[in-house]
Length: 492
Image (cartoon, one colour):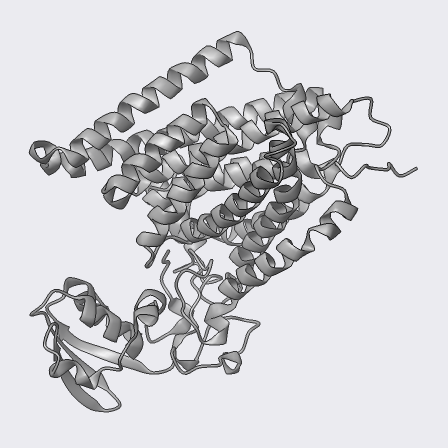
């Protein structure tokens, strides 16, 4: 017989009283806040060049450490607000998981503010936390499922299935250079290509089904930990984000019965103080003028700590998760909110899902091709001849991706690489890059069988380029493309 659930997500026959349920949600609130703060710390270690430069960076990392120690609603709300400002003020070609985290921050902050305002006069802090968890949890699960969908969907293209250029085989070979025992080449390349697709497709499905949640969690942690072996800095930062997002699939019962030992608490406290010391050193090197020349050294130290720290973090979470779930399998049996409560929150879930879906569909609609969850997918839609196996190029609604130029020479290092690789680039992307280049850089390009010469900072020479308003400069980001869509190299 099917189990009936109350509006709070616990079984109707549960012996837990209301105060005990609120305690469960309080503990889950702490778990979720701490895991999100840990992800923020790993972002800091990865993107040291802009995360610790400026007052917002200092405040952000201090708030992350404070939330990790004492996850209070007001403190977590402040952390989310500063993170939104820090990312928004640097909004440009940011990594996909940072863009996704920005959207999640806005949702979490909005719901938390509403809960704090509504419950301020007649409720305790526990009520705010429980209401926030119940409201946000199903929305976050839907958002994570959409993210995984597009990471799989974008890979359904001819270049990804080409072992010579596929991101799966390329990354496997690059990991193999660091770890020679890793098998690469031949059948292992094909295993990486198709195995990655299957794993990424099944992770959200397994996590949504109660009976397979343990398998899904272990599979996700193992898969993303293995990806973090790659030396590209953003990958372990992405893994930290995924570990935190997967925590939303864990019901309150799991967190309630989880009790770390005294030794584990001491180890966690020691790690916290170690993180404080390392981050303080990084901030000192980044801000003291006399030490600023050592910023690259501090960045490599931060990367090393984040790289190996993430592996330890993922393995530790996996061990704890498996041991506890094995002893208490029923703790993974229910979600925090019943189907009825999910229906009542569609007013927030539907617009969010629509926004995330639009972000993922941008390349196929003729909009921008970066920051659309297409990381490491070999996808190409520019030039009117895409490589996706399911979506035709005729679906594009603009000509932004079709008006390509060939760069002949350029003194701008970034634009010069496009000419070196004999790639073409949308003229809107070139226009943005030239206008953002240092004054005096010269770029020569061919467009519609005509040759043009532009000098950055010289308004007269820039008249041949299309005008871009402030929004277009911050939105229009495209990739450069080679002559053959089936040989698109691996790019983030």
